[in-house]
Amino acid sequence: MRHFILGAILLLAGQAHAAPPGDAEPSLGPWYNSLRQPWTNALCCSIADCRPVLSRIVDGHYEAFVGDEWRAVPDDRVLTRPDNPTGRAVVCWTPRAGVLCFVKAPES
Image 1 (cartoon, helix red, strand yellow):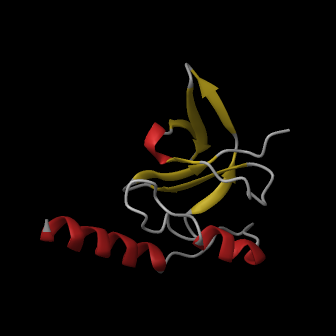
Image 2: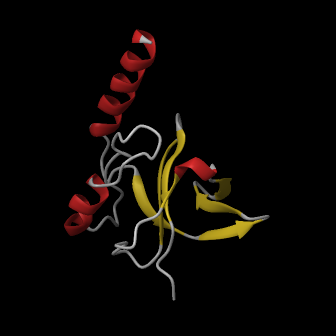
């Protein structure tokens, strides 16, 4: 268990130093920082790892377009948030950990 906790701390510490994408909206930083992983209640990451994306539903499961490819979103990573200010789906993703959290696009 200690190895898991240490690994999670190191993973989050490494992500905390990542720079936001060039098109990040700084005013949304607090909202991104409010996102929590459903299974641990830990931070999904930050504005550096979360971004609006194209999304679709395939066979009843979400996919997000990240890194120039469609990636499956594990069902346990989907957040139900009615307050998505981006107007699009949001994915928190890192190459090492994959999809950490996914917020559905607001309903039209």
